[in-house]
Image (cartoon, rainbow, N blue to C red; front, side, top):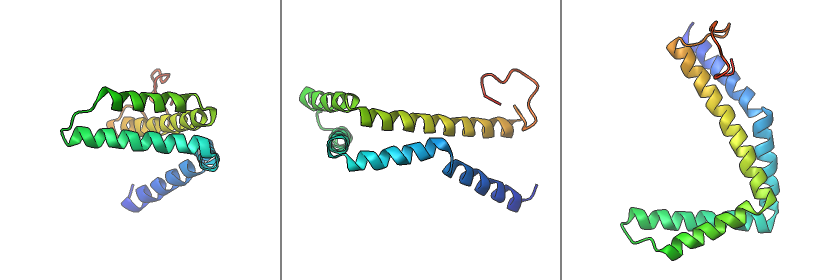
Length: 127
């Protein structure tokens, strides 16, 4: 197979992923999240707190129990918000799809499976 054919197949795969149900659901829910002031505010506060904590750790500063508790409280508030949880679940489903794609590519590269099947038990890889 030539380089151009491989690039064409990669483009087709990318287009297929871009239009898959899992990604469409993530995008739809992210739009809803951005329109919901409460849910979006929780996510933004959590991200800012997480970044602040990470920056402190990288700078070698002490991370206080108050810092950690604040982060845990924000995390719990996000988990109590149904829309935030829907977004997180949808992102998990999309991430699982992408991991399966990477796994299938790695299996093909290593000779573990082929598009026609490997002949073995594929319950683990979904092929």
